[in-house]
Length: 180
Image 1 (cartoon, helix red, strand yellow):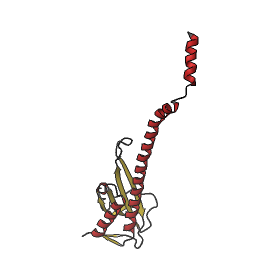
Image 2: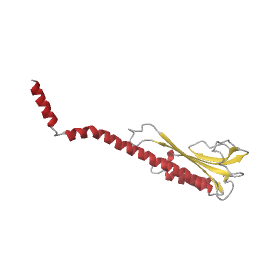
Image 3: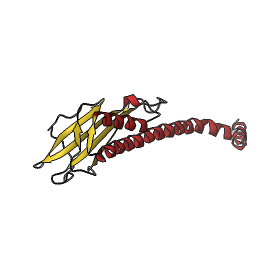
Image 4: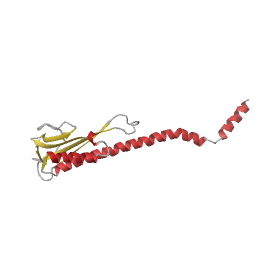
């Protein structure tokens, strides 16, 4: 009886047909999951880069101006949203502000926003130390965008992608805001 079992075990050990198919069946689902997770992560990273580019571009466009009016700001917001395409651009949250130093306290000179609360005039804002030049100002650009997975399997909740830029005005000490 024992010799019969031992001979059967030797036959099973010597048999190699189908072992590759079994290995593939065990590894393939894991590899497919890793593949789709990489796709998901790369889509989110691309959108994060777009959010960074959008905030830099918005701040740069305002920092180049001496005076910003309603029409100009509307165009700047529209151009900033175009950077985020092909994602739904109406979901973007944008805010642009001019900040100035008031004896060591950073305050808002003016602020405009779309889909975000705009800062009140003279509201105190926390910024990195030694950011503002003496008797000068900075343009503070913020962009937020909620990433919602296209696949919906690996990242099941919304992830808020956010970036902000501080830029010094190029042509003047303070960018003026004209409201119509």
